Length: 200
Ligand code: AP5
Image (cartoon, rainbow, N blue to C red):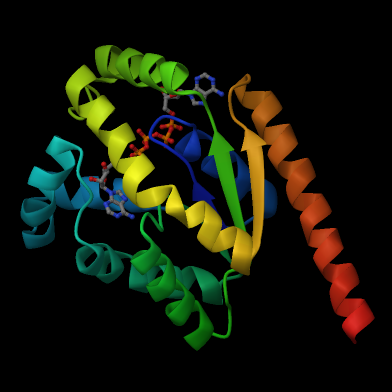
């Protein structure tokens, strides 16, 4: 299983990635968590990324590729991964494709979690008040959502033309979203297996 979880801030990528990784027995790799670890440890990458993250802007593609390459390669050798929050630009998607191809493991399924903007804002401001994540303030949340629309949403066209793109309604209780994701993923994997059999 090599799955890319795509969706706006607050759509539930992290929440669902943990559950899907457990269900499929693969690793969960989150670009945001890896970056936050670098920031907490004050590494050079963390110092470079911190300003972009606190403004709600994307960290440069090259930095993100540098921190992800090794964990993705290791997870691919161990049977697969769920990538949460990556790719976020068409350029990242193209780099990811080349890395996966070199590993003989081109990524095949992208899952988009769709949630309305008012619900996203509600979830993120709730979390900001509860957990104090510094980019969960009204101003930064709105900017993160705009950045998603400008830079990440074009990925939906990119993946619908190239790989299997699944859209899941994420505006429902967590368990329902998980059930729906697993059922749609199962159907997509079966469809693909059928096509491969026909070609073979
Ligand atoms: P990142 O950590 O990826 O944050 P994000 O995309 O903004 O996503 P969030 O973690 O806020 O939300 P989520 O979709 O994971 O939802 P979650 O499950 O947490 O990135 C942070 C920053 O790092 C970026 O702004 C950027 O600067 C940088 N970065 C990261 N990746 C990058 C990349 N590839 N390129 C460049 N820069 C990058 O849920 C949110 C809340 O909602 C939680 O409180 C949760 O409990 C709740 N919730 C979840 N599901 C439901 C539900 N179904 N119903 C009700 N509540 C729910």
